[in-house]
Length: 395
Image 1 (cartoon, rainbow, N blue to C red):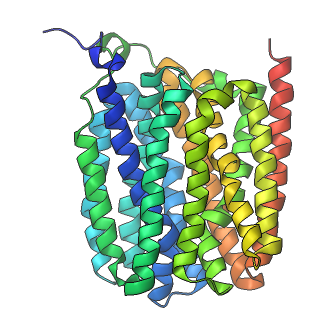
Image 2 (cartoon, rainbow, N blue to C red; image 1 turned 120 degrees about the vertical axis):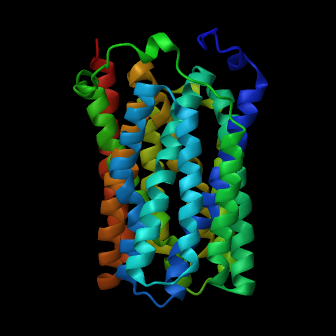
């Protein structure tokens, strides 16, 4: 029987369309789930610190799940099959949201769901990086579909919950995860070539000892930790300032519209700077975004400006990180490299950001928490600057 080494679908549009569908459905799920999970938990009568503990479950799973799944995918080459398994288990787990068994039960349900959904992005990025082969214009167009999915659900869910209340949150989870599972079933059944799957297991240690890689991961950690003030607490912060849920959804949607604009243009923009320089620019944008949110949250124009900076502080930063990881973790290291990106940034950074942010918000309020996030973004920018220096000195 002929082996899969040639992968004839790689050059066609069909695999790209399938990944575009997965990106759209996955981020449609994220677009409703992440912004409105804190508000749903609040509607169940839970205090801020309990909410921060439960929302940090996602970050906790990102400490171990992506690397475990990434290692398994590197060894087996079965990235698509693992994506399907993850989507199916997450969908089944979401049924537990229909029963309000208290914080411990909801925490267990979220643990099951997030252990599988948190691995999907690194698996998808590893497979997609192989497919686009460094063409960041094509990558941007596929990622744009994800932004559009996020934009659609964050806006619709905000209006829906504002009119009908947060009680329909479990139903939204079931429907959106059903779409994710359907999208994974449309992916091509691609495997790594048999020869590659039988190759010697390559260690990541030598790559991690490169100064530019170490400073990159340090910048990533502080940058993403700072952003969990946005991811975990922006909705609650805006609610405390008197903004209604439709306005909160519109502000989230505005940030994703900026993200869509970046992904549409990045093919023409991304080559104008070296990747560590982009990392530094994105860090500066994060400092400005956090500062505007912390100091001028009561002014709509400041929130609009801050959300528009999402184009750089998230979208350009994400592309930059994927490009750096692809460069330094090629071939058999690809799955683990993408997993390290998720573990260090959204895992360790997410756990620290959510737990420390929740404790600070409960004791001091949201504004001091956002000022702390601004300070973290400054540290991340300094690390990004060191990465640019390390890159210039590299042989």
